[in-house]
Amino acid sequence: MTYVAGLQLQENTYIRRRRVLIFPGTVQASVGQEVQPDTILAKTELLPGVPVAVDLASYFQIYPAHVPAVMQKQTGDYVLPGEVLAVVENSLLAGGKKVYTSPFRGLIEHISASRGIVLIREEAKEDEPVVVVDAAKALNISPRFLRAFVHVQEGDEVLYGSVLASSDGYGADAVRAPIRGIVASIDTRSGTISLMKPYSPSYARAYLAGRVVEIIPERGAVVEATGSYLEGVFGVGGERYGILTKLAAERYDNLDAHHFSEEHEGCVVWGGAGITLAGMQAALKHKVAGVIVGGLKSSNLVQLLGQEIS
Image (tube, rainbow, N blue to C red; front, side):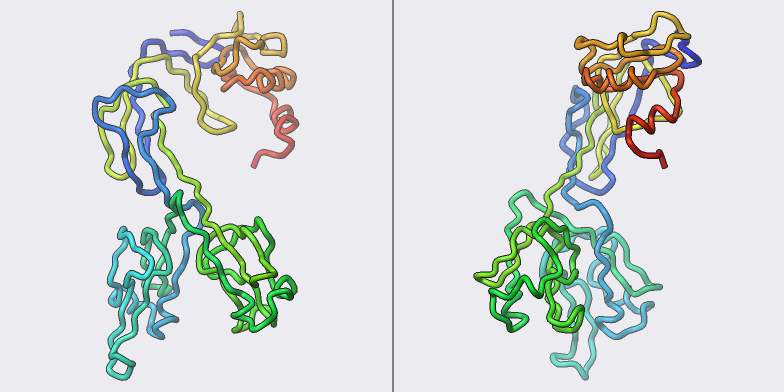
């Protein structure tokens, strides 16, 4: 057992980590598989952020509490564009019923009986086609005047149902986004607005060099390894991996710029009571994967980041 400024390093330790996706996806690992830290265990193409809320109570003109009863799909189900989501049967309606179909592909996350809404998390594929909205035709204007009516610019990210263009603010004639996506172009020759779905798959990586011992369906896997374990209480930055390398000669040392060199690129360095601002800047310069020390001054960290830590 080794101690460094109160940090306890446990060598040759059994380590077990549960590595899962935030949202359901496809598991690509198998039990017994030898993995490296960057090995992908599972992948999801469900879009992060706030899911789309579909107001079925308003659409069907029914009480929110009645929405679960008219659903044709349930929480956890995948839906495809055009697939029937809910049906209300009424002899007074044309055809005897009113149907709501899913506007996009995704996963039903929640059905709210208190609000009468359904939350759907959209899914994006790598080969997703560009969606073209004929805004000029919808507004009955000349294509060359389109930019005078748009509410978006190229590069903007828009949510499903967001107003793309309108002639009187946000009135009934508003042209709305049929998908969540990024505005690719506003064409004043054709009068169209093109949207691309943001393709940003999320991965659950192994994080350890070890072996897969358990599969968690649709989520990820459990990885076991033997290695050195150093536990801290506070971290800044995302997950990183690299060879664990000791830098400080004494437990009371503060890591400074001279401690770092090109040979530490990609390493996770540890040791010492703290690290100076110059030391943190040097670690960034030499592309160090991570630094573990006994403590640091919050003012130095704020100066390094250029913002307060919330």
